[in-house]
Amino acid sequence: MVQWTDFERATIKAIFAKIDSAVVGPAALSRCLVVYPWTQRYFGKFGNLFNADAIRSNPNVIAHGKVVLDGLARAVQNLDDIKATYAELSVLHSEKLQVDPDNFKLLADCVSIVVAAQLGKDFTPEVQAAFQKFLAVAVSALGKQYH
Amino acid sequence: MSLTDKDKAAVKALWSRISKSADAIGADALSRMLVVYPQTKTYFSHWADLSSGSAQVKGHGKTIMGGVALAVAKIDDLTNGLLDLSEKHAFQIKVDPANFKILAHCLLLVIANLFPADFTPEAHVSMDKFLGNVALGISERYR
Image (cartoon, rainbow over all chains, first blue to last red):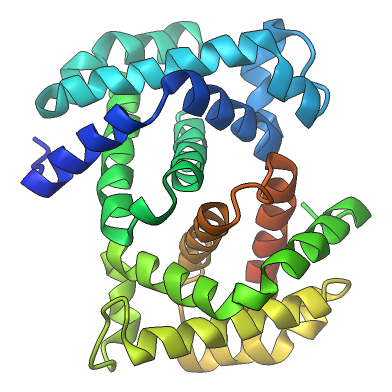
């Protein structure tokens, strides 16, 4: 069971109250597809991912970015039971989507960097630690049903 | 994943925008690393004060950025350009090379935090590749 301090709970909820999933999601996903181009293997049906501009403006990327962030927001609503919250999602990513779980960390790193860019001075080292701990738990839960 | 001409140009362009803040970037990245990845504190057990504003953290952040500046200058031949630093890390400091990725992430995050407009995805990918190649250069003499 993950133990959260009061500071961590408050910090994680505050970040998600502040950010817009329709902005952060697409920014993080498109950044991931540019910085780690091998992740494009999972988005063959998305159309034009030929260069950074195409990725940034691709409507499928934009829509899916929001889906990903909304998924993370669900984990924030269930901080004490992320593993159960993500059980179905984990099966989906393993059995149907067949995503290499190493990729979850790459996307998580892009989420941290986008949020750091958005929050400026408020994204202190302590806030970063809480946020990255949350992302690590989400990533771990997403990998739990792989076998 | 070697650096293309486009990567080198992107790194140099980004560096020209951020280098005047190099000391602040280094200090911030290092203090984040020590807070977010506490296992890295094991390399600094000889420091009296590991807190974010401390003279030692600031000083060492500056040292690290000196290394980054050197790497930018030697971008066309990082392996040879970083040989002295590699010897130091291999035989003196013996940092586990896994930690280079951790510090790289902190550096990228600080750049994004301080220069959000400049740190586009295009700049990010080139900088990430560059720091990866710097890590390879520093690991060159390890074994």
